[in-house]
Image (cartoon, rainbow, N blue to C red; front, side):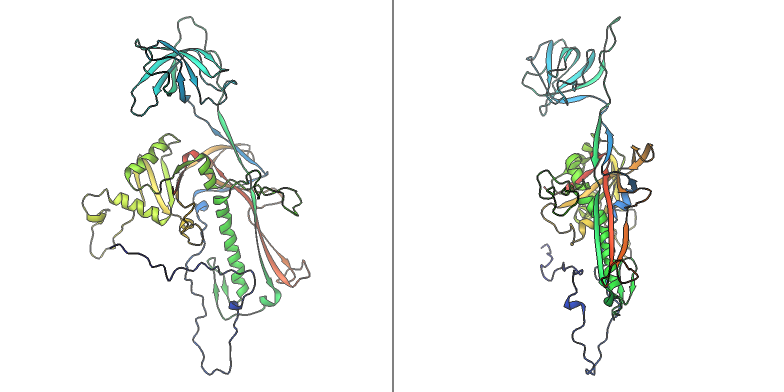
Length: 476
């Protein structure tokens, strides 16, 4: 019988950070008349380990400055021409036909990239069909997105007038002494853009509490230590802000027209609402590849992923950042390929000695492409995306390497990672990671209030280049 994790006791989700001083932060029953002294552990026990979740963008991306509220870049379109929603005006066995292109980009403005003299292949889109033709283009009507074709086969057109066909250009043929190719094709670029958002945080402590010694020795992930409790709160605010610098880039969405976020905000000098930004998950959902049936758990499932990658940029090496469930599913899938051990316990390049720890995990595999996998803590952390049901994301496939883009600051083409962060900066203002102290305590003397305020600010956006090479794995 399969085991089941009991519902209680469960994990704690109550945040340790509080906006105000609470009763639990201070001793209320300390009595010097009590003759028995308790044994105390002065140092905090780190029961949740490293609580930060930021690491993804540091591993796969880079950071570079920008000077504007709007970041734009161009990505190459396809080199060759193919249309997949076309139809013929003729029945089968006809030697010539007029082909209507329903998926032309800009009908009437030259959006159909077919020219007289080009040779084309036409293929029936019906599942299991073997019907196809090859022909030469004899006339083109750009206004109506149609072209006339004469077939090379003696039997004429093999498919019917009602059939939906795909057409691609594979070359051209001209007779002796004929005129040159008519009309020219312009390179097809797609222009994408994103806008940086301003991220802020604040920590405030009174001057009196700064002078209050505590009996607990505080520790945080970035090495803060001592007996001054406000140091812990300030460092945790800093760590939380650094996590938000990454998670905001992953989760951000643009504010849609007529949305509450886009409405004019009261008291904002600019008189405009929030605009949002295009985070990683949003971009991949819009123009990336999405595996929406849970996790691929078999080789045939991964073959579907690989076949989609073949239709995209065919990047040789890819890294899958996944949650624990997806990682185990891949381990089980790879272990199942071993035919010499029950449950896959004999796979791996080692002798299964009784004193050796058995490694049941894989770090990667090769099947058409190289795939490496690593756990993404953000997807596992129960205080973030871990444990979600609605909108659950199991992993992201990220292509390794870089791509060439035009950098307006350098004034030339430069190689950039597929994922990178642009932050606002100039010669006089760097908004990558700003922190400053205000108040009337802790060395600050800017206001009359007896507090110290630590301010945090960043202005940044994530640029996802070549989103068609990424895969988003999410629940159905």
